[in-house]
Image (cartoon, rainbow, N blue to C red; front, side, top):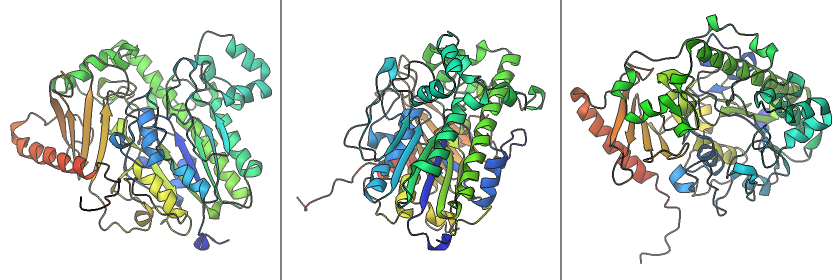
Length: 483
């Protein structure tokens, strides 16, 4: 079957965890080595401005799988279960005859203290799930694979109190390699050859803890890596939560930026780059398998991530109530044979909720009214007329539990970013915010929120935010009559 004749293409979604948009060479970072992702971008479409709907895992992934904003699907924080009535796009694909599979994490519910993440009717026939690669995950397909393939390494790691042994496992036994192996197994042997497939490869990296096998760490020298993006006194003009989070990440559950020496911080950045490069190696193996199996011309390949990582930028680590681009802007690369223009780079504001309708439309299925995103098919063909000029992101005490709670809403509109830190009655915190002119200040170092010369711009964006929030309310429940 020729690519132009694909009426029911295969779909391969490759998703990492905590990979910021600039952690790909093709996005302009000359210090990172991602040759396979760079090649994929050259063969497809690289979206310059893709925003997730929340800067932490669970709410963001729920938006991906439902095509809905956080207030609509209700999974507002890690540790919250997605409601049973919410429909995943994978189920619609399965009902339409797609053979669906997944390897790695899903994170649509709480998994703390060994609790098994509740599984919705997701349509996945192949489900090789592990919430995380460490001991304590309520289910661990990776551990079963490791115990069968490398029993001595498994036993040694299980007997160690040092969790980093899992991150520095030899490449052939590493959880990143396991994701690649399971994906390749599906493509070669496990899929049903008489059906189109949808498969999700959910990599754990480059999530913290920050570690990688020595051979990948040795690809980088800290002297060649960019230093964190910040300036002296930056936090003085930013909302108070940033000073709190700089001292203690995750509301005190993890080390804050101020606890890292300069050398420790650069080693973290080195490990982060190494983790990304290791993922890139596996992406190369997966893409090679598509070619060898004759599937490349019939398969849409999407590479993306669920949110970013601060990495010391703005004197912050990890993730939290942060709406900086390094936290909520992610890579999105789409190779769509016969449709996407090779090497194109649309600058339009796209969002993670756009992926579900994209996949359904590609499969020839109707997009349900409950979905709030738009198919990216037109943009991949260079058809940008009528595309929205804004992106919306919510944080509702979604990560570490602060006291008082933190609720933040971001609107990206054209080249401006407005971030509202809500006060009474949402929280007893001070109502404050951030305003950035991304054309003049792409690194988001200068907060214009309280600057008198920008009060009119701030007011206009706050009014725009109100209109956007009304436009994105869930009104999919059909009206039966006038009264």
